[in-house]
Image (tube, rainbow, N blue to C red; front, side, top):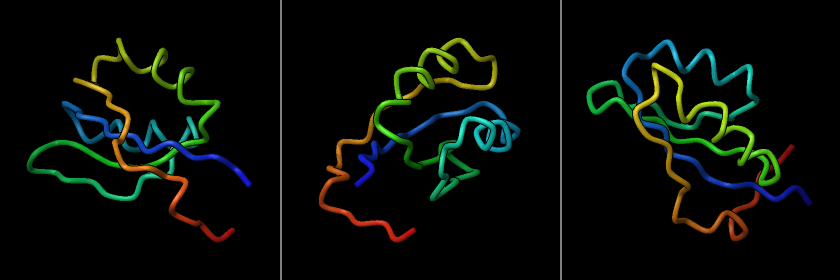
Length: 76
């Protein structure tokens, strides 16, 4: 079973959504008015993603989701 980690990204411009597909982030929701998105990523790749995006010009803030992903099951 693949362990997932939820992620919340606050952005300045919606162009970052397409950029996240390159990092294999599965985006589940995008709010255009409040400029944030939610998604999930493999747990072992979270630190790499955080380090790559923390200083990106289109990203305001990155947070780990407080919801436990272990209780959720995803079908492949």
